[in-house]
Amino acid sequence: MATVEYRGMNLIVPENDSEWREYLKAAREHRLVMRRCAACGLLRHPPNHACPWCADLRWSWQEVSGRGTIHSYEIVVQAIQPGFREWAPYPVVVVELDEQRGQPTPDEGLRMIANLVKPDFTPEWEDNVAIGKRVRVLFQDLAPEIALPQFTLTDEPAEGRTWRLT
Amino acid sequence: MGNLRDKYCIVGVGETEYSRNSGRTTRAMAVEAIKKAMNDAGLGPKDVDGMMSYQQNDSTPSLIVGPDLGIRLNFWVDMVGGGSSTEALIGLAMGAIEVGMCRTVALFRSMNGYTEVRIGGTGARAAAPVRGQELATRPYGMTSAGQVFAPTFMRHMHDYGTSSAQVAHVKVAHSKHASQNPKALYKERVTVEDVLNSRWIVKPLRLLDCCVETDNATCLVVTSAERARDLRQRPIYLMGVAGRVSKPRTDFPWAHGPLSRVAGYYAKDIVFPMAGIGPEDVDLTGSYDAFTFTTLLQLEEYGFCKKGEGGAYVSSGIIELAGKRPNNTSGGHLCEAYTHGMNLVIENVRQLRGLADDYCPGWAEGKHSYDYSPGKCRQVKDAEIAMNLGWSTPATGSALILRR
Image (cartoon, one colour):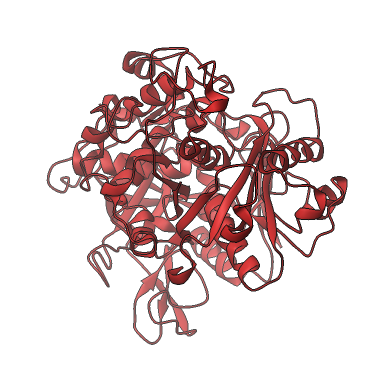
């Protein structure tokens, strides 16, 4: 069982939890991976054991680019977990990856939850967080077999108009 | 429900004091709330043979509470759940009675939601190990309901231009209602400015956008219309119910958009046809207000206004007591107490009876002034049909339509 303490929380990955063990291990190798359905070919996140669209049980890991766009976000001002208090205010972002946007229906996409961080893994300034801004994945190494995928802003132009809470 | 419409009724309601220091166990509170609901209905221990509750490992189960009251149970179930469980369990109670497993069900929720297990996810919940599916969110400091739901409303603001000032009107309206409710924990009326000046919790939500965690127990008694006719109170008929209707991908709701869409989008197509009515027929609503925006999003999704126009709708005065279709006339979760939905149904039952327990001296005889100034009346005049919109998450909700 892989386990690590991160901001006062014990992250636990039992041996039998192949979906998260392999996902986090790939992250530790600085690869962002998704499960791809062997039948319909669609990627999915988080990792699970059946295809959300065709229910096929066969899959393989597929590396993705880790590039995407901020689809929505929040700024946590009052942290709940004690280990996050010194980190607040911090952004939590919903990132829509470039792969599989608007598939298989226009309302869907390959989306992830993460923090928006600066390259040193401190929280990005609130004024820099906006829907529509471009991001790329970073890997926050925590243990020999565990890293957390995080996201950081890129220099690419934003997609259309950006929007933030003012 | 089809042929079950109007065949079942809510015949009794009861609750403990809403407080932040109950000083009692969930067992003691549950017993009091159930006893009050039985008294309200005019039922004794031999008349109740079914019991249901919902809990999050924070309560006392039916098989303890029932015998405390001398009730021998023919059916009981304690379901894991929070918001949206009330309406779902009412539907299941009807089914249990319909198939003959029992005759009358007491449905309760008992929680020391402030002094023991904070729903907001602080204390022991925050310190719990993170494994499995939780690894997709909690390591990023996304734990509490507010943190999990906030991106949904942020996206709504982006998509439709909904403003913080607009949604603040939900708190303003509910605080006005609470000022007419002796049971409400927060009776003071607040303004839009008060909401906008309160401190940030998780942007776009401020403190006064969030409900008030409390200690309480609440109970509803459900039985057949046939039995209901002989009981103490005017029966309140169940016209339609939808339980825990969900968006796709409840495992990770952000995967399926539009993010600003909530489960009522699907539930409305079950509950309205079952009841044979539409939103325009509803006199008052109980749209779950865990946060100000949960009320807004559901009112939109069920068709009380057009999708995207919820901001204008909630700030128009329509949802206030003097308005066309008041919402959460008890003050709701934002002001009366957070009960995971029970008090919102209890309030609608009292409204339909014409017996809102306000400050009118003759409320118990149904004598109301309809003066909605502070500390006065909160009875909706001639309320015939009420609706509850239960919320679990943006992805799961329940609905209930009641008539007198």
